[in-house]
Length: 387
Image (cartoon, rainbow, N blue to C red; front, side, top):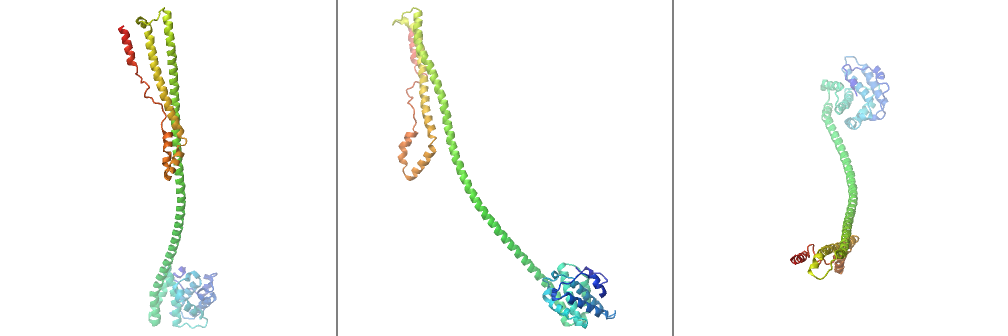
């Protein structure tokens, strides 16, 4: 910002100001000053400097004041925003600049306050921006060289500046940090509120989705139960088809054995007629008809076995058809029974359940097993051989 002040040869003649700062105008109202007032002060100080002999020690301080005022004139409002200089010294600085004109006499006290105010401006800038300035070193060197000529008040103000300026900057930095942290906390709270709002919104959606998931789960369970009954009904249907096939097979064999049972006596009659054997109730006639009798008994025995299987399959079909029919309404019946049990009327359906769910089958206890009658047949054969 003021690097042009850092050169070793910082003597700027008044006639060169218009060339160096052409087009750079101070904003009126900054520090309660106008550009005309600052320009008029610079011109008056330059005129006072030109009137001094080159050996006058005030030449250096006038040059520092002029350079400082030119830099202030080319500063912006933001350069002085919330500064220690604006808070403490801006009013007295503005008053001193406004009072400078072509007839002003620059006393030691007036010169001190002008260079002191300029020193405050650039010292604070150096602290804030962390930049080294040769211009500040020149001002501090001037103060060190003329410390003996300073009054007690001026020395106290210099010492107070050295202590109070860092304190002010630290306080301001702390306030800035607190403000930034407050803004961050406010932003954090706002974000947390938004997050909480989102969480509440998500919780509502999760509750809705949970309810929908539970409904879907219940629907799936109901569908699975219905599919189980459908599968059970399908299994009964398959068993019924198998038993029907077995029933047809038993009927087929029963028909075959029935035909043989009918044909065998006819065949025996034709045989004896062909052999001219007269059948009488004598033991000698048994030798001709005994094979037919044995064959007839064997056929009758197997016919009875197939008849037993036929009745057994028929009984199984009745039970399977009953259970297959029950699968069509057992789900609704179970719900109806559950409601009836809650109301205390479950006993009304005990006889109904006994009638509906009891097995329907004929008594197969008297049907002969596969080897019934074999012993009687063997006894007949032994007696025949004994004759």
